[in-house]
Length: 86
Image (cartoon, rainbow, N blue to C red; front, side, top):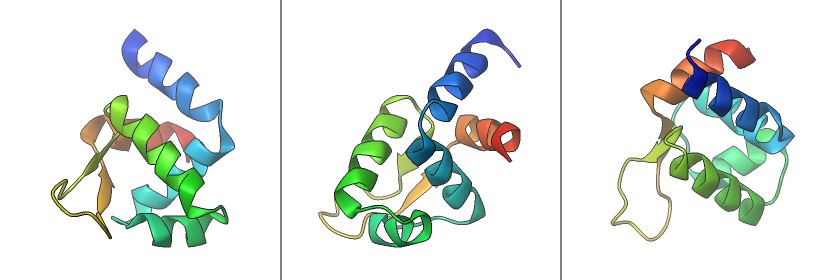
C-alpha cells in the first residue's frame, strides 16, 4: 500500500460511519437513504460522510445534476481501500 492510500485508509477507519459506508458501497451503488438504512444512521449523517469521502476521492456521485436520489459508488481508490477494510 502506498503512502497516500495508507493515509486514506487511516482516515476511513478512524470513523465507524465512514467504515460502514465503504463496506455498504462496496456491495453495490446506493442512494443516501438506502445507505442510511444499511448502516443504521440518519440520512443527514450519511450526507456528511459521503461529502467527506467524495472530497477525498473515495466515492463519487454518478449524476451530480440530480437534486434527490443521487447514486453514489466507490472510485477505484475507494475499492482498493474497501479490500483492506473487509
